[in-house]
Image (cartoon, rainbow, N blue to C red; front, side):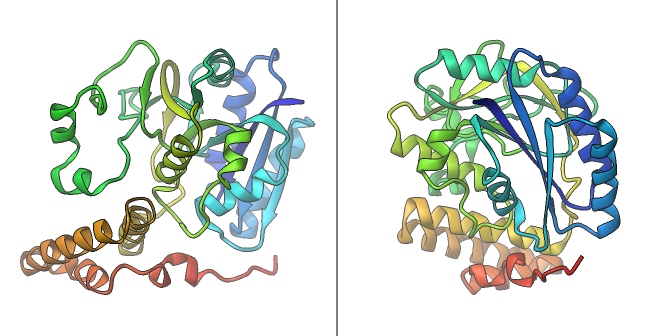
Amino acid sequence: MTDISIILINYNSSSFTIDCILSILKQTTSTIHYEIIVVDNASEIEDYKLVQNKINQLKTNTIRLTRSRYNTGFGGGNMHGVQLATGKYYAFINNDTILQNDCLKIAYDFLEKTPEAAICSPQQYNEKDEVQKSFDHFLSLKREIFGRKILEKINPIKFPKRKKVYTNPIKVQSVPGSFLVIDADAFDKVGGFDTNIFLYYEETDLCYRVSKKFKNGSCFLLPQSRYTHFKGQSTEKSIAIRRELKISLLYVLRKNSGYLSFQILRWWLTIKFFFKSLFKPKKFHLFILFLKGAPLSSSLKQQQTISRQ
């Protein structure tokens, strides 16, 4: 059986995908049996062919490339890859990352030796080698209204400081989707990523569902394992992306915290962005979005078309 199935998504960012693959091949020990599944999420055909040609040049059976004719988003792209995966664990790794050390072996050993752990993630660094926040607290009404710092001050055991640099593994609530390793059985039994979500909060939703379903469904940060993340290389920083972030936020909150929490946050954000838009008219589109309830029908997912190439 394969120890770890590594799933990468390429979306018009072939150079990052290639560098990520090369770093996995370089850093990962031969003592674990792994496979790399690259899902091209309906990139431009030229970008897809660059990845295809590089994989062919590597001449290895370790890597499998598959192409979707439809951009299914982060969760959907990963679910496409899962259908080809055979590993005991799944590693979902953003293509705009570089492994600094043998992250996958460290994660594999930790999950094998830690019965309560179902999910783990390495410590994240930026391109300047500066430590980045590498875990989060579950999405909740109190987190969104009062903020994470207040929660960390009130209950530091339940809500450890995100900006602190840790040296030993620490139990957390959620880890980033940029590098997430999970027990395949747990992932499969909760149904994997929610493909209603096109972008953002997929990993938060996944970690929450695993923790609620399994007694041994805890999530950990592994600071001895390190990776570099060149953030946002597969998504354009645009009004549409900002809207998508808010749509996912309210969808996941409603799903996991209920209708009342959703309505309270929705109207709080509506009022907040109404006043913000008086001084910053560019925020008006978000006010309108919240006024409408930020429905999934406004998601970028509804704008995707099917490629013939």
